Length: 169
Length: 217
Image (cartoon, rainbow over all chains, first blue to last red):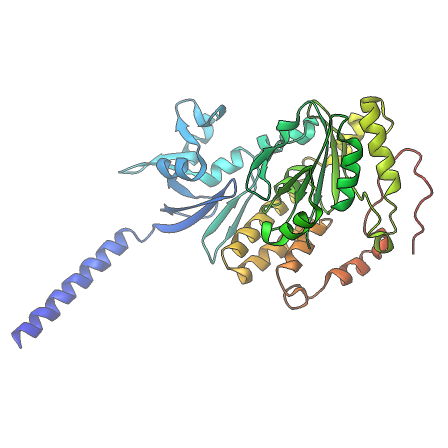
C-alpha cells in the first residue's frame, strides 16, 4: 500500500516538474524557416504579429546572415541596422542575442508568406535579388542539368543566349 | 524541345547558346522523359522551384528572353515557339520568331529586334508588389506540397493565382499537382475559355512590322 502511495506521489511530483518546465518554455515554438528555398527548423520564443524572434546562431544557420557590428552580413553583402530600428531587430535575452527575422525582411523589402497550421515561414526574393531586372542585367542563376551537374547563366558570357522556359504540364 | 535542337544546330557556331529551363515542381521525374527523348546538345536545365520564372517575372511557358554577350537583356519575356506543334491550339506561327532570332544572332545590337531600354523596362514589370508577394505564396505552396502537405499547399497556390492573375504558370503547375476540378473548381481548358480562347492565350511577340496578324476567333 505504502509503495503504491509512494509511486503515486513520485508521479505527481514528476508531473508537476514537467508542467513547470513546459510553462517556463511555453512561449517557445518550433517553426520552419524557408530561406533561399532551403528549410531549417528553429525555435522561436515569440511569433507575435510582425515578429519572429530567433537566436543569432539560428539566424546564421537558417539564412547564412550574421549579425556583425557593421550590420547584418553575408559574404560581400551587408545591411546596416538603422539606429531608429535597432530595437525592432535585435534584443538580448538572458542567454542569447535574439533577432527578429520579420523586421529584417521588412528592412530589405523581402516578401514573407506564412502557413499557420504547419508553422512555416517562406522568405522570397529580397530587393537586392530583384535589382537585376531594373538594371536590365539578366539575373544570374545556377541550376542542375539532368545529371545533377550545375550550370550558371554567367558561364555563358561572351555568347548570345536564348533563355527559354518550358514545362511538362 | 525538338524544335530548339534544330535551331541550335543552325546557330551554335555563331557564339550562341540555348539554355532551356524546365519549370517543373517534380523536377527530373516529370521533365526528364522529354529531355531524354529530345537528346539536346544545348544546355537543358531543371528548375523545380520555378526560380527563373521568379527572377524574370515570367507568367507562362514557353517564355524566351534574349541575353547578349555581356549578360544584358535585349528582348524580354515573350512567347517563344520555334516549331508549329501547338499551332492549331495557339494560332501562332513560329516562323516570325525564328526569323527574328536568327537576325539578332547575326547582327547583335544592330538587329531591329533588339529592344530599346525604355521598352525593356516597361515590359519587365520589375517592381510590382503583388507579383513579388505572389511568387512567395507560390514558393510556400511548392514547399508544402513537396513535404506531402497538398491540402495545406492549395490555399497558398490560390493566393498566388489571385495576386498574379496573369500567371498561367501558377494556375497550370498547381492544377497539374492536383485534381483541378476538385481543388480549384476549374480546369486549364475552362480558364483558357474564360480568358478569351486559345487563340489569345499567348500574346504574339511584339515585333516591328509584325507580319499579318493571327486571325482571332
